[in-house]
Length: 113
Length: 117
Image 1 (cartoon, each protein chain N blue to C red):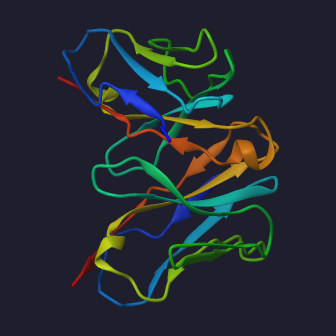
Image 2 (cartoon, rainbow over the protein chains, first blue to last red; image 1 turned 45 degrees about the vertical axis):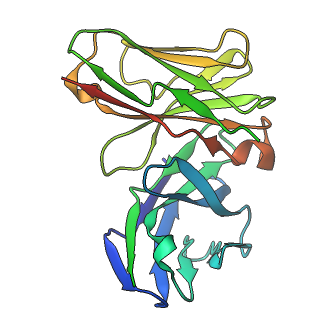
Image 3 (cartoon, rainbow over the protein chains, first blue to last red; image 1 turned 30 degrees about the vertical axis):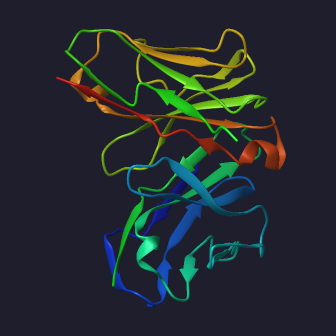
């Protein structure tokens, strides 16, 4: 079945450091890929998405590229801020199965000043 | 604009009690999803509605779990005879359409944290 595996946390970085959170997926069809973010005390928010191979999703300085050859969708940001501290979830949605959205376990990021 | 809202935000139940969790999706959103999120884990799919029709309930962990969306808007997730293993955050999400990108993009509510003692 479809699944998502993401880098285990927690991740602690200093402000302005480079961030990578790895995410790989297994899917039988052609999924859409997502990164969701959950700030402390808030619900899940869509951060970015990509719907086909080689697409790049980007938002708020974060980027992720849909790599079909490596079945990956790694999240990157060039310079993190304290306000980026949150839990990040990688997810996939299988268009051939209209309700199958699978999430990774989440990676907690803490950015220190 | 208003997002997805859920109530209550926190619920404490004694083992064996019944609970009802409410979800108000974004107005006009056709698709509605329920997820269960255990501590330290990602959300796990429970069930899916398209308007008032429950098209998939394969993720419901037992027959103690029941969900409805009678008028195609507000949804209620009911858990009967709660057990300690039901303790989790229950998330509701809605999306505008039923296919393609309009279905893919789900908007989540803040969740209801259920604690069963």
